[in-house]
Length: 365
Image (tube, rainbow, N blue to C red; front, side):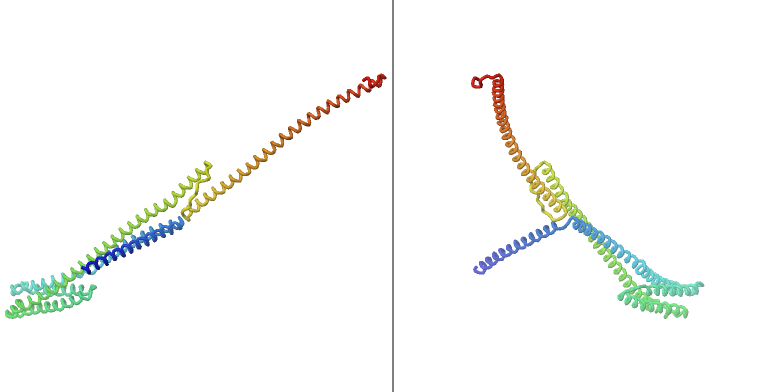
């Protein structure tokens, strides 16, 4: 029981540690992606376009290279099939068929030894043997691997034995030795022919197996090329869509924000904050808008303070004009009083002058 509890406690601690490790890895992955996004924001739009076009060009080259390699592989296989496998198979078949015909002709001669056509049939046998030798020599001249070369050497030995048995059969027919004819026809020739056909069949089976392996290899290479091409096309499409989305967000969103700020500025609202989130060309554009807005706000403040100073000076000038007007009115009233006093003095002087001229006493005046 204690062991079970200890195991449970240990398991719980392990799960706790594993959970912490998973959370730690999640945090690391999160900060990693955050750092990548921040790094992307520092890239210029020109660099993003260059990276996107470079990746698409790489995908295009990859698809083209895979297609060319697949075509080269298929062409090489077709060339090997047409220049090696098919000619070697045809040469082997021709050599075997000619040997079989030579044996068949000798069987006919053995059944009818006194036939007038026996001499011509013997010549046909020699022609079949020569044709079989040429066909087998043609096969031996074609490219072979190590295993096929060993099997071809064994077949050459079995062919030589069969050819000697055929020639011995013909010699026995010439000598008309029935026991020898029977022994060659019933024992030596069938045995040599069976061994030759077995060796030839083994070689043909090996060629067929090689052809099957080549076909499987070609099919695998074709599937691999198709998978790589499809993956490259999918990656190119994803990259194109991601590039369109990121560039659209990197260009259209800041332009929309800049237009919105221009509308507010044209409406006279210089209090809206211009947020610069990137350091690319669009970030420089928004920085210019923010600088323009700040300078316009500073200009407006300067004009406002100047207008207030002008208004204060205008008020002072108006007050001075009012004071000057009141002083002018007072001076006008004083002048009028002075003129009245001067008029009264003039009239008094005139009366005194006239009285003095007429001899009137001035005190009576």
